[in-house]
Image 1 (cartoon, rainbow, N blue to C red):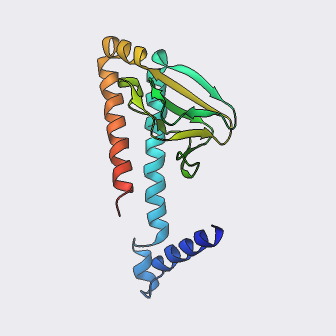
Image 2: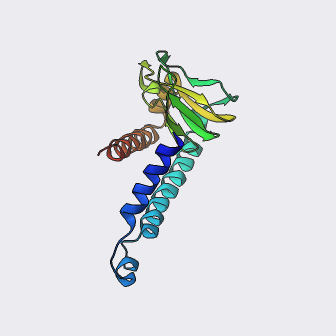
Image 3: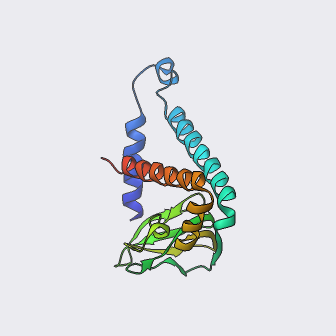
Length: 170
């Protein structure tokens, strides 16, 4: 697997090398500019996430997970949405294959707070994790007491889902 990753890295690096003069590379088409733009977008999303968690705090419940414990179990009915604020957790297929890793600023099982949904993957803590849970009951109270904030959450979730779809396109 390490060899495969190294080959992928080599292909990515080779794809960024160009025969263009340094002036053309420095004009904005460089890997550094691309990474800087991506980092800026990521930091912007994290700031928005932190703001959202702070605003939602009256409706959230704290959850702690030890290494190896399941934040989400594949096939289980989800009745809450998790906002991961610390730690790292890996999504795994039913066969135990690691699919991706989530970290602070990620939302796990976004549909859970809006109605029962079945988890497609298990999400296992790679390190101690802390998350805030928005339960279905909490979501109902949020909609009643702060509809503007419920709408803000929905917009955030839809934007995150759209980013996910766009990043998985070939």
